[in-house]
Length: 100
Ligand code: SF4
Image (cartoon, rainbow, N blue to C red; front, side):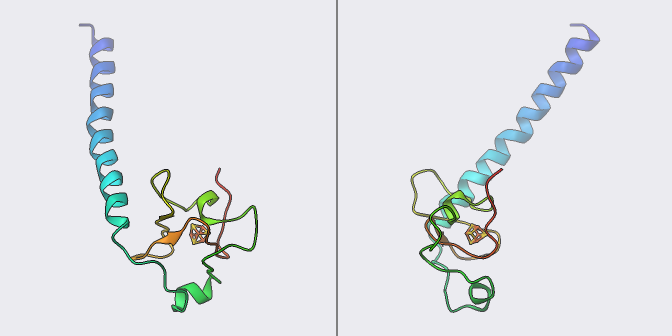
């Protein structure tokens, strides 16, 4: 094995070692997310961000927001702006941003 091949192997192997646990953490985080309650629309954070369970904007909802994290095919997911609660896929808040 040449030095260049060894470096490439070590680089690839290192990336795989980092990527596998990261993917596991994301999967387990989403699994736990389904156990969380839905956002309380009366909470201070929800009121401040004008969160609603059903978006009035046809082209803006959590499921097409850049901050939404959910397993495909689920009706609710996580948003970093609402720690400890799930947001609905059809919900909306004033922090909505298009997916890149
Ligand atoms: S930022 Fe607002 S619109 Fe986007 S996922 Fe979070 S709650 Fe939904």
